[in-house]
Length: 302
Image: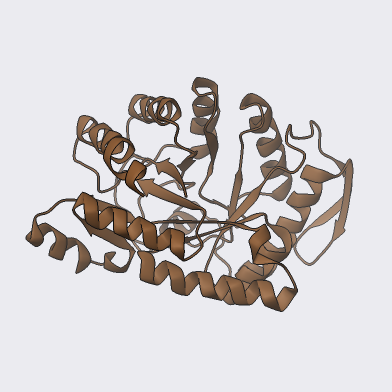
């Protein structure tokens, strides 16, 4: 099992870069950053709050680290043209010397699409667009020239230079929908989902079924998941976390409980566990101490 960090995009940029350097020095596997423009409200409502822009943050992260993988989790094709995504990814692969992973999704956050006048299409149309976009992106990363004629995109003998450093720059798709999972199995190298062990295992089964339907060996796919971690032995705090709106995406308890939960992820076949900082403390110092605690006391015992 590999372990990666994921800071809240509202953190001060200095803290974000310090976390990246810390994770790199401690031997963590990856650094992920969300691709959004405002806090999510689940509706068209807008709430104030800093949200730093992923494609500005990631080059800085790549520049101050040496070993850790870096990537967006995930960039919506409802917002970004595949040619832009491919060129950004290839350039960041050069900046990072071959450590970049391109995270893609179809798009979902209602308020940012509404506020900025970006159409959030009906689910089927959105997935249709995504299926074309991932094929184009994959081709632009792999081939000297790309031609593609679809419903949403028309690409004519398009170059994509420079090529990535990696022979195959990985694409990871964050999804749990059956059709999106089939698209992921066909065109991506990695799959990601959310959930505490039980929920993550259910979603993994959806992905395994998708792989079977398209004739892909799931053992060839890197599978990652993330959950909110609450490091506490206070039963009231545990109950509050598990009974909240993110309860089925939360792992709360003692170090021993967290270790057992991570063991379940590994037993279920996940390759990477992503640890967001969202519930790791109210201050930068507390969040840093939590990641150091993971490194010293939890990960070695998994």
